[in-house]
Amino acid sequence: MTDSPTEKTLEQGVAEYCILMQKSYIQTYDGMSEKRPENAHYYKAQIKDYCDGMIIEPTQKYIKIWNGEIDDRGNPKKRSIAAFVVRANNVKTTKGGFFKVGDILKPASTAGPARNFARGNVLNKMPTGVRWTGA
Image 1: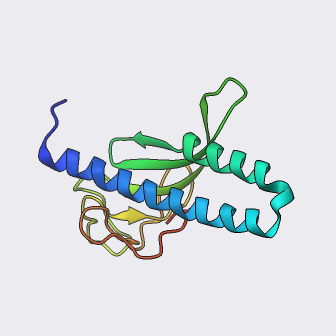
Image 2: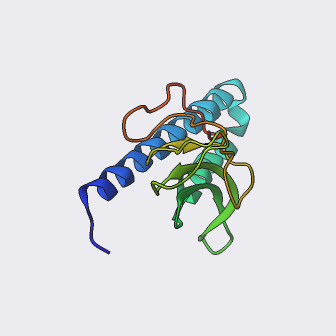
């Protein structure tokens, strides 16, 4: 597979979206550390686990962004889907239209997204207020 400019731009957009999710997670747990300093070591471990455990999995139509964790052997383990990013041009909406490449979709299950509307686009309309919980 060759790297076309579109693929690289999509990969960069997904990476930027993941970084925004990680920053949100860090901000949440840093706030908890300030409120409960006796648990700061636990919160730091949670932050490392979340950031190191995030998995980006390309499929035929989508890029799945997994919230993961690190298992006992130090390997990332899939836990839940945070978001889907449209990778193909032929993904239909529930209203009969088509999504654009880079559209961010909310998960309906681990197998597929909710196809009612896009929550943003990693290529040109990155949503404001990205949360670590996903789309």
